[in-house]
Image (cartoon, rainbow, N blue to C red; front, side, top):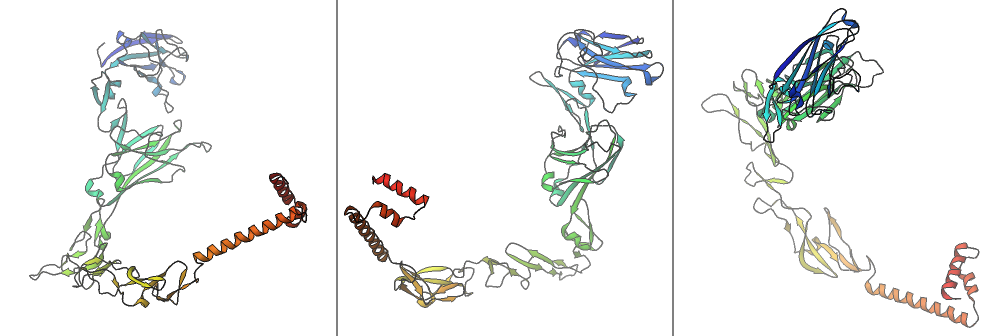
Length: 515
């Protein structure tokens, strides 16, 4: 049987009779993708009819779970009419597929007669890409689907409907698992402005109160093949409460590059769910168009009559408004300039010198032009004056007197008067008689001992302590050897009696020394 061709057989099944058809020889090869489809017309009351399709490798199938390999995928949301048109899909990637002879079987109704038609098809690509794409033959022998715009999935079986900004989509309560949508691309020129996108969703359903699962709003960024699922998403929001609006925000940086796909997931496939979905594109214009225009969804001001400019602040009839200009170094007004030959006035591209002001850390040029330079003078900074004072050293203090300029903006140091300098004393000396000038302590003299002990004094103190300890130890040893004093006396004298800690220390000393 050639690719993309159908074979159709018509049969009549009597009550409680099972019929099987041998699939054509092409079904024996693992390279083919097959589909068995059966349709029936029940004679009599449909409410009591039954019609089921099965497939099995090697022998005719039965209705018991051990007697078939494939059956139509279970639909939680099927209707009575759906049961009359059933389909089995399988290929080499399907779990349970084997090479060999395959049989298709139809289980009839025991309550009424039925007439059915069974068809078998073979495709080069998975289900012929659902007639929504092109079958691509790879160099390694494999085949895949290149889906048309708006379709995706291995077989191009999923469709993503295009959303329109600011136009809500409402779906009535119905059975479904996933509904897919695509967000419109935002032009690069619009992203230069402050444009953001909000995806809002709410749901309604007649689910029982004890059912805890809730629909989910899923967003995924990528290319045209992406498929947002509960296991693969960029953003997710669970719709907890019915008729409450939940939203996911996308900022301009997230809208650059790639496409966004939206999915509404219904975990309660046995219950009907309805929802409302809206993609809002919100733009923020410069100065809110100065109150003389409307901000469109691209972030551009649509100015009222007689008004112009990026923020609609310029009156084309001549009533010009100055613009406030600000940088990291300065701020100023750009005043209106009116042409000498007549015509509407417009804001100047240069700063007004009367309103010009430098920011903190910068100073204006001495020619009073609208320019600033970074200040180099640091009030209170110290510099070695190369001058010595008694037992110390003097450091000149920086003074910013306002004489610095754009060409000479360093500190001014005075090295003539030591009383105006900061004094640092040598080790063992401390400043006495200093005074506070601004945030700096200046002047004073260095005196001994005011701030600590000299090195010689420390040495003499340590030496005396060692000599005293040696003399005391020698005297105690002589008294003990002469019989005037025993270790028991020493213990009673120098350790607190009846102290478990001291008793332990005494016995430890006795064991270590042999006494």
